[in-house]
Image (cartoon, rainbow, N blue to C red; front, side):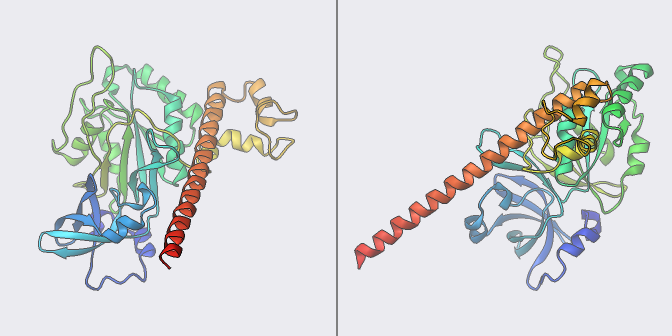
Length: 354
């Protein structure tokens, strides 16, 4: 297997320039199972663990390998040890559920994210903007995929696409059907060898079916959507990187009911580009666009030149981003205080020994 088939491209080549691989192999993490990893190299696929020093030096979950990472590997027969995580050019992450000020990686070294929503019950423009914000925070190109289009007529589909374009005019939209295969040729033709694609979306929108159809196999288990609750069932239980037959690499991810914005800065402004551009004309540089006199954003809102829902969602994500930033700083301050306390205890013990 060639490294290019695993998504090795010029970005990776530039990032690892100067690295020595004497006595090591270069591989890519294709799946993760409770700190045990599967790593694919040019020669083989290995079950791998991380070194004790890597585990000890990790300050957060981000410092552990994640699917999509390129790593240095020491190979021992069929077992291998990950000795180093190589630099990443992108990292998709969200707020860790129930963990104060922490992030959870979704996938790394992703070029393009497929943000997938099903027409009907799952369609939600605010959630699309949330996914897009997470992608923008890591400078990852985003493409929207509307699935299950066989369930609605052409007029309804055109109306949904128009709503997306009104709010997100620069994002490309692929309407597809996993049943009739409509739209798949255009989507498949857009996938490029050497690029890594990640599928994001709620449970039940058809992510596993999309993966199977792109792989031209039935590798991923598929469940039907619940008719009683109209909610999707979890099918994919872990992230997995797979090589597409026509080039490119795809990472399927579990459905995420909670998707908190984890970036301390950036992402929101790029998603809400119209608001960001309008803010350049506000009277005050630090305008919050809430009640200030001379606010160009509020003026556009009053003149119906700005969508009210987009404006509301912008502020919601900004508040969430600010809360996360405070949580991170509070956690760091707490960790620093605990570190100083631990150090003083050690020093006191050493004094007593003397």
